[in-house]
Length: 167
Image (cartoon, rainbow, N blue to C red; front, side):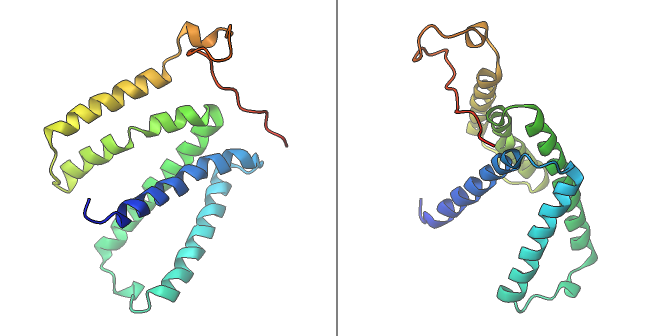
């Protein structure tokens, strides 16, 4: 690793994104999903707009080509549906299981990068994909041992129970 800083930045970005579903679920606010998306995206848009004004003084929005705006529109549409579907999913399943399903993200990103961006795809990535798929399958499968009551608190098949949420 030549420079660790980009990896630290990536770790922080992933950490911040990992906080979002927890916060969304913890809020327990009676906000419909589309209104929630609108409110959070308004906040994000304002932060982005003012940050652009403060730190990107040479950038001019009107100088962008139309095809760039079309890519931005596609990005926004995919982000909207991804956001909506994630809000629905976390309202229906435990966050741990949602995040396990989220582990497929690097596989999908890698395949799309190969197909669309023509980035190299190495044979060893296939081995990683197999391990990811097996891990997700193991983590999400419900076995009868897991669903039964634990005889002792430290058995391997016992779930660690979080304290009840205080409202």
